[in-house]
Length: 171
Image (tube, rainbow, N blue to C red):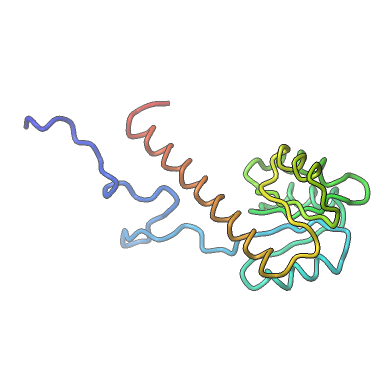
């Protein structure tokens, strides 16, 4: 045939983040609730955030940066909500440690001390966003949803990139 080599189209390639059931129908791989780690030394803040998010997300909390880091070493989290002012290690230092431990974690900084300088420092260290206390349940839900959508698009993009390099035989 003079049509050249067969090139798979998008229809022939299953979504890289999906898996197949026994009948070969493609199903989504992950149906588990996204997991969120809250690191804040104020129990009332942890409680309020947990109440705002617990229906849709799996929540764990820690009252110190060290506790939060210890949880990240044992479990996988999609998002970490970190206060800047913590006893012991501060939130900015925690960002470095969290991302070193799990580069895929999305960090959102929460603080009662609104300062542009602190926000810029947190974002430069790799935080995704910044929330100033007090915030409403609707505000935190919106930031979490946006962060998860960004995270999902990054993962999907990376997975397609791997599929493309496999299709073209690149390493």
